[in-house]
Length: 506
Image (cartoon, rainbow, N blue to C red; front, side, top):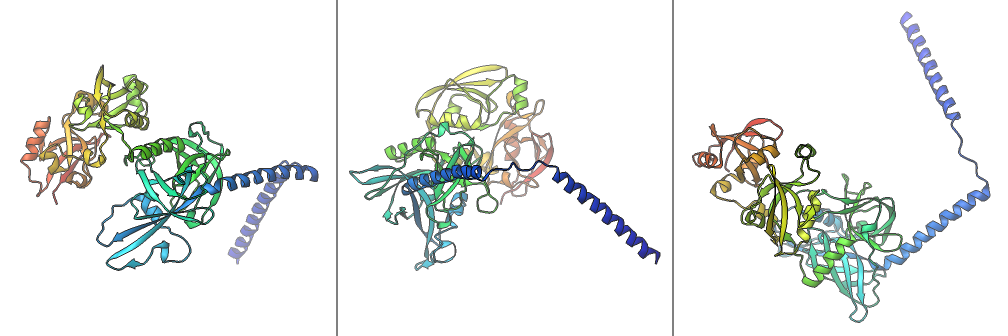
């Protein structure tokens, strides 16, 4: 009995406490300043301003929509084809036109072990010749390249066969051409003067819904490192104007009705818009377009090095306010011929100060192929200026970076080099001995080492229980090891951790 009375009393007390809390909260809310009262005439005046803004945006959308097109693609896929994973294409091809068809817009398999895979994206007409009736369309490389058939649909429902004039996967820009009467080009703006906070429109065909207009703002500009390690050249405009699958290749437009970017990708975990979209700046797109129309391909200069961000603490220690670190030098390429070494810090390229990895990549790529340019580097305590004759960037950079330098590297799936005093200081291995890993083939034994794979910058100090103090020691130790049975390595990481790993052939 006493327990039930105690429980009832406890519940009563809790109710009182909760009631007091609610009362205090409501009292606090009641003391907040009320929204300012507006007279009906004043309300109508302000609503009138908003209606004018709304009508202006609607008029702007109506003005630009005739220049925005839907691009429908078809690719014939044979059952024997083995395609590598491309996140752009997988994202794009997953969604087809919403009207009918099999799931995701995929057409059923045709006979003879083939099926026609359909995709859809967007584009914008940027020039039109009234005499030849030819129109040039900017879109994304991941929309238009590698397709067996391209069709373009305009705002009035007309459909045209399209020709791919060229594409550049490294910037995700492509140029498509159609021929027809009364096509409306859109003026190109200047993406360099775009500022965060400005309003913008995105127009395209998300999920096959043609001529969809969304409104937002420029969230940021100069976004880089989004797809680090892919070899792409990035300088994105970030926007919160809604972009979804199918918007790819459509224009980002300012309030002057000018194209300031080509929408290319979104940040998302759900597959749909999450408030962050990226567009290729129109200034960059214009340069790529002009070169594709003139030459049909993009030519970039090549230095032949791997580069890495220079840690702020290292900069402070070296008393420099810029620079990037050379992590690898590819044999037989311009930097190697000019005696640039791994561990060097590049301070200037062709007279221009180097402060950022991505900007440096643009500096090199935009230089003239065949030109000899000065490269200022910091090596130990010395500042050197080396003359480098640039060559054309290879089409397949992955094969260059993973090209074996000899039988040992090919056997292990990695490349190593001597631990120089300069490199030891840069990597935090001062006073240590060994050889440094500078390249790892993702399909080789080094990438499959157990329990953890080897990576760039690791220091190998022992091979098969034998100390390694030089490249010659390493090569001799590896030559005497049986990789089929497993080879034991003592490895030190840049974070100071030391571990044993085992390399084994397939």
